[in-house]
Image (cartoon, rainbow, N blue to C red):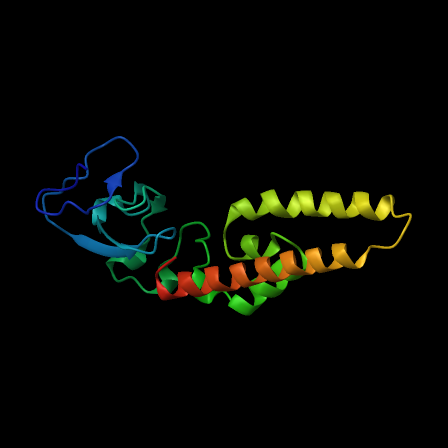
Length: 162
């Protein structure tokens, strides 16, 4: 990876242009996706850079250089997983399959939520006979498994492992 001389973990600039500076004015920030620390240089402020660990695109914020949170002049930053409630993710996923994943910041949760809503509506529309006990047990087990998974996914993200 092409970083700055002497620091291979400096984020590369996504837009065209050099990341080299006359003075080495480094800042430190954390990737929103993998949570790992990355170094940035002051001339990258406000630009999109690529995380050297997971290749996510991250906007360099003033906080990387010690600016107070009030200096946030850029667009909305994603809410970190450390502020998410594992219990809320579990409850959401238990009742609305996929909603807990969306709450936890995983966009692929939509791929579970939308089909589960559509199938529920189809089932309600064609309901001629009540649900059997086997179907209720299977649905409850899936709900428990998805709730458990969302809970632990948020907990791992909070501990820095996820």
